[in-house]
Image (cartoon, rainbow over all chains, first blue to last red; front, side):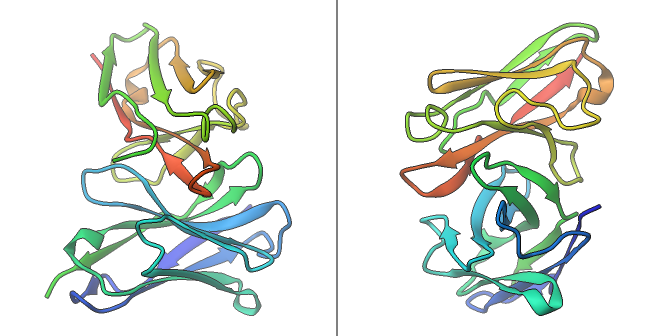
Length: 120
Length: 110
């Protein structure tokens, strides 16, 4: 049974870097049919793709976040991470990690989410 | 603005049928599979429909999905109060080379 668990600081100051980690258990990170993604949801708003990576290290980013977001993995630790630089209040959101399925492009597993608040 | 367009809200009485639309373009819905997610406030999204029409194990057949051209539809029959939630469509966009979601639809069971 795949389980995903996000972790990271709940509060980040404006202009600083947000760093989040997703611990993966119950399935291999090195999968040819899956990718690992971050999705966020600002308070009261809808879901937004941030970025994803596959087992070959290929990455995909939302155009609006491409310059600030980095998704990377540490297979030895069974986790993947997100860094988002130069954050503003607009980056305040619930951040979810999720596993996506290639070609079908659906998320079959989600973490419970971690709230990141940008405030001084 | 979300790439996929959904109505902000729909409502119906218990036992009734409701449809939620998701409109896109030839670079996303027109070319790719569609998925649907149910999100009860305060919880993570849950996969309802994948590959446009398929239901994961445990999802009742009251939920069904379809697609025509560049639009997709989620149908819920035999509405229950427990179906009250936000519903999101999702797919891949070949032009953006990234996944995309609809803006979400709030379902109210009157």
